[in-house]
Image (cartoon, rainbow, N blue to C red):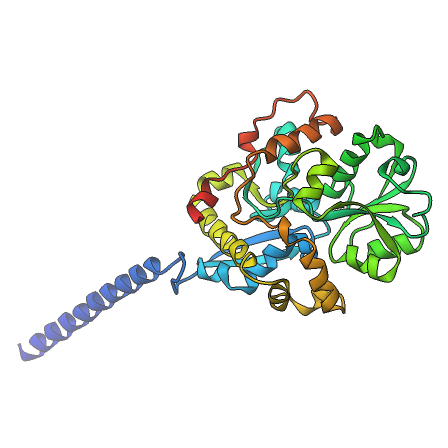
Length: 353
């Protein structure tokens, strides 16, 4: 009888330990769930991949700067930035579901809707292109205005990219058809400079710090400047919001909490940019972005700080202005019904601000 009583006590003890262990596991699991996501939390972070059309280009600067400042982490996001040649590549990767978001030119969202695909800008990073049509110093004597680009070899980062769209818009404004120029994809930075030095392109659309490198070396000269909102307004007869962060509409609608955290991080960065000097901004960037000359990098940044949005909102006249250019220059958009409200949203930036 005593042996049986000891066995029962032992069995009861084991059952009690198992019950308490189960309760502890549930409590731990509940605790882990409550600490996942959100700014300032310590649990597992939401992973996102973002493809950027040229991380070292200054027009894309808010992407890496947001990571460097730790704002993604503050929002409970583990973000991987993937470097690509142009915004065109970013767009393709977002559509294919290879990445969660892309950073490229806003006009891509209009072109995609014309093709029956839905993608929207969730935060506007640049309110002007931050680009310039550069002419080779060797050709500067004969190319003195956009009208002189007819029949010339013109460099763009990639065919179908925002740089090609901008070039076509400039040509259209002076009566030159797209077919009356020859476009060559030459990238940016060293590859663009080499193409101009070797005479493969007579002129081309590029960004900072490539612009300043061409100027300082004497290889190229500015033909048309799009590095401020004011000069852009003059050259294109309207505003032209350029680099943004875009995502597929259905992803945004089904992941509003994640999208909000992402936009919060970018808006913090845009506000940080407008309260710090070009030198302070440059100090936060990876040193290889300077292309061996930090002073030149800072000078280039000073020349175009005004392109960065102060709050991430889409400018009120921006979508219509960009659409007007697309209607005039892009056959794929002509004759198509475009709902501009489906190409961007200020829902998340309004809350972030």
